[in-house]
Length: 113
Image (cartoon, helix red, strand yellow):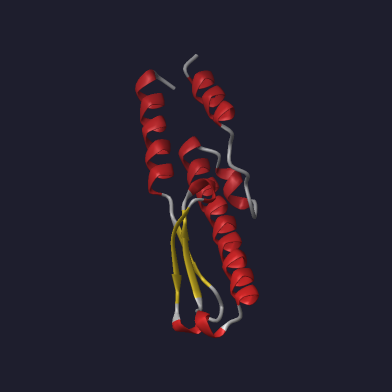
């Protein structure tokens, strides 16, 4: 891969990570969360149903919904990065772990040779 190809791949990765977001609503529609990469909670909405739950139950529901959103975020971002990196086999796995920054650098550096 030439320098322009590496730069384009790097740009696409940065763009994919910057734009990545997943929205998940609990089964009872009491809690909706939007998360980004790294577990960042970007938004948390509580419907009127949430206020009928006790404090402990609401807390558990919020945490469970955030965990589900983070799992989906990891899956979606892994699939997107695998596509950008050309690793089509990762798309067939139920969950492909995200590459570390060192792995991304090694992949990009290795492609320049």
